[in-house]
Amino acid sequence: MVKRTSFAGDACPIARSLEALGDWWSLLIIREALFGVRRFGEFQNKLGMAKNILAARLRSLVDHGILETAPASDGSAYQEYVLTPKGRGTFPILVALRQWSEEFDDRPEEIATMLVDREKGRPVKKLEMRAEDGRLLTPAETTLKPRPSSRRRSG
Amino acid sequence: MVKRTSFAGDACPIARSLEALGDWWSLLIIREALFGVRRFGEFQNKLGMAKNILAARLRSLVDHGILETAPASDGSAYQEYVLTPKGRGTFPILVALRQWSEEFDDRPEEIATMLVDREKGRPVKKLEMRAEDGRLLTPAETTLKPRPSSRRRSG
DNA sequence: GCCAGCCGGTTTTATAATGCAACCACACAA
DNA sequence: TTGTGTGGTTGCATTATAAAACCGGCTGGC
Image (cartoon, rainbow over all chains, first blue to last red; front, side, top):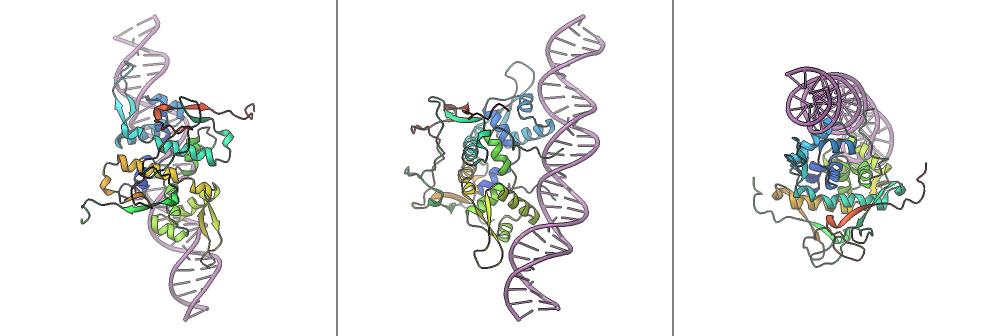
């Protein structure tokens, strides 16, 4: 088995996320979906990717509960792909990726768009990590703890 | 050319981030690096990945300015890989991935660790997106705007 | 009804990336 | 000089990706 090692059984939540999202196209498909794209052809057009790959990714995203197929919407007999809550929950990931580019990209002038506060039209602030009590946290002020692990451990 | 389509020239900052981070291993390597892992063998051990792939990824991360090689540190004549500021800047991305797993994973009981506030030992809050004036923003309260595009457009 | 054409894929075929194992170079020790 | 451990590179098999051809269901013209 030379398969592209699966992280599905990994205990690390980051690896588990990457299992679902960590290929070249999934996050871009989700990005389009967040913009309202729903139809196969529309994804294919915007992303310019091969149709077989798109089909495989859409299937995978559906399997992972990130997209679901809805039967109609514009009357045509085709189906569409819409985000589930789990899918919409990836929004912070996309924002984090975007902000990383904005902050560190070598050619920021090539970046075409900015994420702004719709009401004011001003750029959103960097994502903030806070403690339960509201204190702003830096990476150094955090650490990892083993989970309580509600039994289940033995096996 | 069947190459795995590069996003390097893409104007979308998300695609640009994925160009550097969007393969199966890069973010996991960075995760380990954030934990203090520096040596080739240590990465290889913790991640259990093929050495050639690890070498290729490390080289790519160095090329992208995410890691840099430092000549020594423990006296041995070998080198180590340490995160640059750009590399440490991926922290929010990893947190976002982690939190997405924590919130939506189908088998959350398999997740081994929690990110906590070091001082209090309590879980950190979900990443928050805020406007310049501090208002908490939902995805729907944001939108994309074309960048000012400081000339350079014509060509 | 019959052919043209679009949408939404699947199949086919070629190439690139991945993974494993073997190999190699260098440092250091004996 | 041989032996061991680290830090990789090289070969080769397997898998994923990509482009393009193909195909079925539906729509529309006639």
